[in-house]
Amino acid sequence: MALATRSGLKYLSYLPTLWMGNLRKEEDVHFWKADTLVCEPLDANPVYAQVDGEPLARLPVEFSIVPKALKLLVPRGKVASTIVSSLKP
Image 1 (cartoon, rainbow, N blue to C red):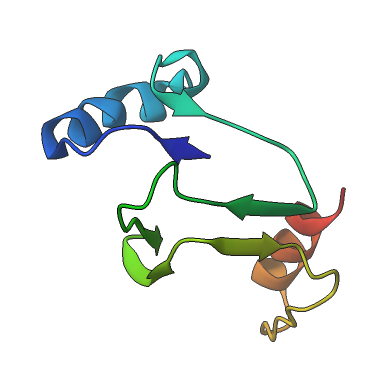
Image 2: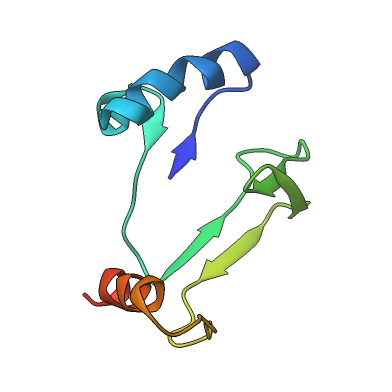
């Protein structure tokens, strides 16, 4: 997902649509499905990428899905079975 705005107020305006499950209908919100994504600047001006609001790097940046790269340790019991159930496709 990418938000095509630099306005902090516009970011805030996405919250109600996010909570209501309608974020995909917003004009400046873009979604893709892919195993790898390369983000490149449109011109010579520097563009900086963020992930979850944290600075990452200057473009170009390549993002890839790494299968089975994350291992979760969860306690036994009801919480664990809920987490495992939610991870199954």
